[in-house]
Image 1 (cartoon, rainbow, N blue to C red):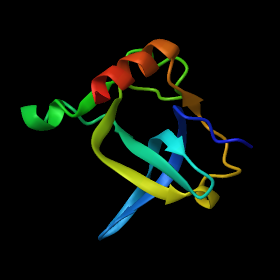
Image 2: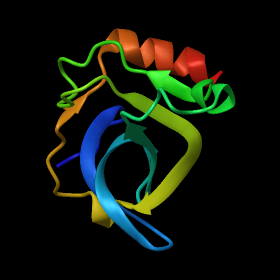
Image 3: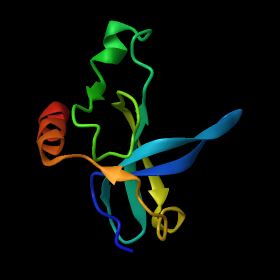
Length: 106
């Protein structure tokens, strides 16, 4: 299965003392690596500085997500293609959200 930009997968994201399954947004990929951003529902309790780095997904319908969600653009992660290849995406960003997201990053 081909990995498409702006698709959303559930992926185990490890961190120092553990990790958890969470939605990720594929941003771009090459033959070996995939660049992704984490998606979160946690927004209200964040500082204004952090909130400015969170992109609000307006069109939740096709994403496979069930609650209002945000793309956390603070850190873009690079993971091996082999860890996603063969997984089935849960959804994708709408064309309007893709356009807004690219403007947000710029």
